[in-house]
Length: 178
Image 1 (cartoon, rainbow, N blue to C red):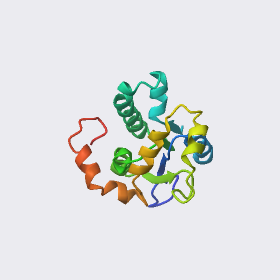
Image 2: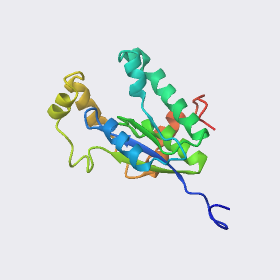
Image 3: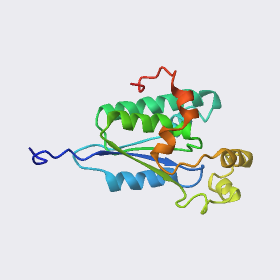
């Protein structure tokens, strides 16, 4: 045995990055992929933003784009991808719930939630700064909306045990619901 007698193989990593647009989620994801990547297993970065960009940020496609991203993450878990890094706004706990649920269901993923900027909300960037970082492409009222509805998550159990998340997802028919 390569791992020795009775030793469990090391857990794979599922990293969920959350934060408002303009805080650097994508660049942080790339840095983490380099840090956690292993030469024998391909890692992956997943974001609905990739699909949003394909469809010119048309809001009509947003629900489907998020569904496709969840599908991609589920399939990556089936293939044993390590690390899996998911980044998006994840304003609500229910936005992260499917990914935490998937990671827990596979039982071989260590799940980490990272909120950007680090130390947020104490170190939060101003709406004006976020607006500038996004080159004015997102209206300021959207940043205010996300700030007002932001739900805190100290750990994965805050997400997994959230009643409104369970209510939202319990009747879904996506392939990741085992």
